[in-house]
Length: 355
Image 1: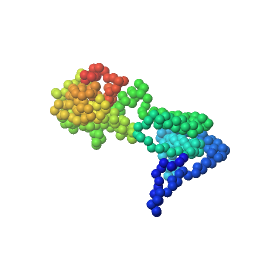
Image 2: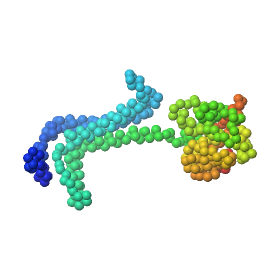
Image 3: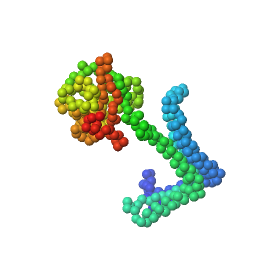
Image 4: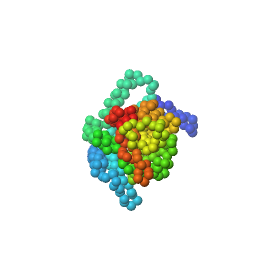
């Protein structure tokens, strides 16, 4: 194409304009001049795209077949086998799609120079019609019509590349079946005889060491039997607050008469609104305040909600004194701990502090 409308270029040596050099002479590509080379490139592109579904399926097989605790220990390499497999299959699939598209543009699409002149910000109807024509020309130049297998292979490669993404949705958490919820969200590691320990020192707690008005952040001693992410999961459900109040100032429901020890009560530390940890304790009012959304629970009245968006009373843990003189649990929580949701129900009477 001509560059006649381009401004003249000044010669720095003589201060005189020089002729517009124009476009260089077009050199035909090897694949344009040699049909056999074009066919080989075409087959290579289709082959790369055809390998993507195979790699996507291999990704899924690795997800289900390779144990998560399997590691590769070869020389300087020590890595999780599943992660290595994901990287090799998923990464190679993405790489092949990119290489195929680049090679397609380099050797299959029409090799023609073009110039696009600047225009005003507002596009007139003629310009829009020109864009539509350019799009049609681009479709023609991509040679979709003549090389139809590339389009189908690209669509298949992109479609299969989404399969690993869909499979990985399973890692967002367990399927929320009724039995699964009961075994996970609605069950903690508290059980009869499990010692209550300070969550900082992990020392067991004697009743005589707890003063009236004192709040202690606590955990089950059996938390030490877990490691890593599993320990974090159990801690998130089992975290506890232990408080002592004057027995004369406590309203104890009849069903919970033996859940306390001389004014010492234990409640879940997890707010029943959205699950924030709470320990803002007001000694005089016996109220526990959640710092996230200001839900307030009256611990002297069975943990009922007195203010804020929480919809359920704070779950109370039944406790007793062991033969060794330490505070221990009598059982697990009798209602689910943590935030409320529509599948999670507590007895209607529990809303009023009974069980």
